[in-house]
Image (tube, rainbow over all chains, first blue to last red; front, side, top):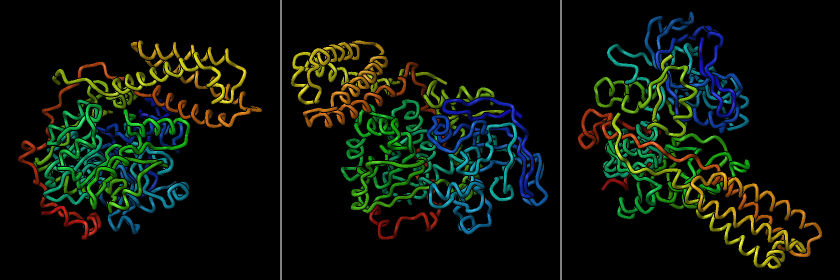
Length: 389
Length: 172
């Protein structure tokens, strides 16, 4: 079959690889109908995530048709149309039973490495380094889905791929980012990063009743889409984020702050960003935490920081004193996708939200390597890429 | 997709701002090295190399002008990075048997400036094309104002709520 494979920093290729096979009785094989490039795939593309090996199949946002099931899989049957969440979950461990799907204790087959790096393992993931199991990803014609009787979401007839594809990651991720803010009717929610996750966080915060939603970015297309979704845009290249947030909140600061940027905050004219970039270059720091610093500083005391943005390692000069003294609540983690999928699927079916609004580019899988660069550089108005195998 | 004359901004602005600042710094440092090589020698611990310091000053001035005047400042930024490496090796050589305590401080300063130069040189490419207008990408059933709170029936799980003592303050 054909698949997009990682061969090193900025080196993604459209390769011929062996077809996946059923390995365990609960597995299923999915024939892809649509997949997407996620912002967190760019961390792999940029070489920021350790644990990749040349030839790894990447991609963790995908959906398709079941073409084969293992003998013990009672949930799926051949012909089912499913969206597959990006986390691999056993469904049986203590964390899965509690609904903490993204920290499944059993699905990471390289648990020992994760234990050493993070103290405890987290869930396995598709196409996202050998630290999370080294599972082949979904930017391919076919994929093997382990524990396929647990997480795949069956899609009813009448909904298009474009409407439901993002149930596997970015829609629940934006939703969880807003949900864990416990939004109150008088809240201002400030969202750093108006990429795909930020866009869903904006609409989720609005649906959940925030009085005011503010989107911070510098890419005109993203800010245009954010405004369309009901957010007040702040272009951090044109105005001071701190001053503008103070102005919009009568000097009190936003009650809820969401970091939808993560480890690759782009260098701005602020000194801390430049120093972060320089330190990252000489390997004195792995991630660039400009957004975290800004959120901690500007958030209203006793407020909440919600962090769906991906961080990978070590950060420096984070004002923990301000965080502690202001009594901020920090909520973070990979998304517990299956907590939200039933509810969100219903909202899509009801027409409350149509996630296809975020798609700006649809191309064939073989054109995927070039689209990584387009997506990274935000060229041609690129916000979200869907690939068709 | 429709195209509208959105204001262009982004990394290109940042790159040019950085180049401008570093260009001015280069020229200031270059003039100092050219006119007062002995003062610079005293501060850095590189003694008896006045001609070399003046040459470095000239290099800084040329680089600074390049940064301020060039349409594409990136090659000049990398020029600064190469100059930083040269400065550092000269400081290391000069620090052997140095009589000044300034050598260490000078090396730290040069290293910091070097990191800043690398960071600026690595700033991403700026935008060239006209931005795309996505003002029609609402994604909701109705205009946003009419959708505010449409999902307020959703019950936040207990384990995702902030501590009770911190929750109530936001509600009037």
